[in-house]
Amino acid sequence: MTTEHKAIELETLEPAPVPADAEQVLVPMRDGVRLATDVYLPGDTAAGPWPVILVRLPYDKDGRYTFMPQLAAHVKRRDYAFVVQDVRGKFRSEGETLPFVHEVEDGYDTLEWLSAQPWAGPIGMFGDSYYGFTQWAAVASGHPALRAIVPRVTAADLGSWLEDGVEPLYGAQYLAECWTGPLMHLWPIDWSHRPLAEVFDAGFDAIGERSPGFDRLLESGAGGSDPYAPGAHPFDKLSIPVLHCVGWFDNISPQHMVDYARLAADPHLGRLQYLIADATDHENYQLADVPVPERLDHDVNDAALERMIPSYLGPALDFFDAVLAGRSDAAALPRVRWRLGADEWRESSAWPPPDSREVQLFLADGAAATRDELGGSLSADAPAASASEWVHDPRDLVPSTVVDPFAFLHEYPDERTVEGRPDVLTFTGDPLAEPLDLAGPVNARLQVSTSAPSMHLHVKLVDVFPDGRALMLLRGQATVAAAGTEPVEADVHLSHTGYRLEAGHRLRVHVASSDFPLYLPHPGTSESAWTATETAPNRQTLHCGGSAPSYVTLTVL
Image (cartoon, rainbow, N blue to C red; front, side, top):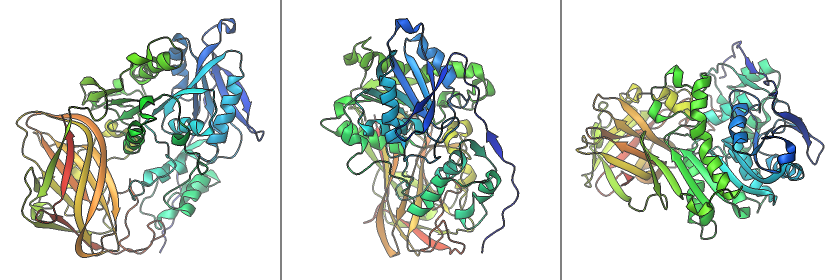
């Protein structure tokens, strides 16, 4: 049975004015489509050519959200030309509004135009998220003018929405809000509507068109779009230095760290990889500023934005000085610069740091895991066999604790709001006698079974404060084919972190079968979660100890 849509209030973001210090150029692509491009030059053109920093983004090159006009002043002061382009189909650019699929060719054509300008020297690219992806697309294009990239909080395969088999609904929401026509649209979403394939239709009706990107997602499955032709993945073309910029609290960090680890381990490409990892989220909020007051909120406060820009842009400019402009010694660049929690910056020759080691903590006392917030225990020693059972009911899903996962630290919710539920398992360690420094990947290996054809696992690593607050450090998801009573092994990757657990704090592992509406929920049947209107509750089991232990592996200093 479907539910009826309600009338909605639609908020539309129009393009901001082109800044006075920028010249907008309509750059032609090979098919005649023209892309709106702002050019900021550092001074009299007779003084050029200058090294160039190129940004290609879909969120309005002149808008406050991406603060490109504000960045331009900082870039020009460092004697770089700054070029910012609306990608095809977005804001002032012409063409079809469809994410991912045109960026390789459009990246090549933009570099071709740019390299022919008399004021343009060597070219590097910079940017976050989708405009980190456009850098990888430009690498895949193979254009020889591109000399270095600084992808931030992104992934080379960003168009693939699966997270270890679990689909983030916030990815689908992104396609609906950002890729329905040239502008961006926001509206309240009725997550109770079924089937979920229709959940954005009220917005599409109000806008007067659909998002082709979202429809392609539904048609192709959760894998989404592959913008690279066979044999043309950027990693196969890479020959230039890369500064990876990640945030420990960024929701895209797991994908980005997979990219970094793969490239750093490559015997030919490892020497080209550099890493900067900060205690930030996708929207660049800092752990040190939590709870974020309005005076430090760079999204609404101009002074806060100016305060944030040096830490946001400075590492990229230092990198470009060395590898693009030749103004400093590239050999002096740290291979890895990372932040331990809110305070200490450290440098190391590799990631994880050479002085790190792995520690296993076993999930124990499974029968107590749904009893209260403390639940079962975490043990350094292999425990006796136990099990924890719970019911996954698609009609009563575990609610997501955060509304906007991109601005996670702006909200930084207390996980206790869900940890008392009977369908959320918790395993809590003893209070720490001394600080414990996490520095590297965290993974969970769980033994599970279910009465359903398959199940979702949502695992969180949580810092429990002495006052009881439970704040998430990392999360991971997985889909498991685990029908029957015999346990099967499930690996859940929780990404990487650099974080200090203070003395008196506790570690907690939190396990559930849903996290809605951030993630597409399992319907409890074999039907697609997008099209299901009928659901079924399932009985799930986590097996602990004995011959089938469940445990989490930490990397610690």
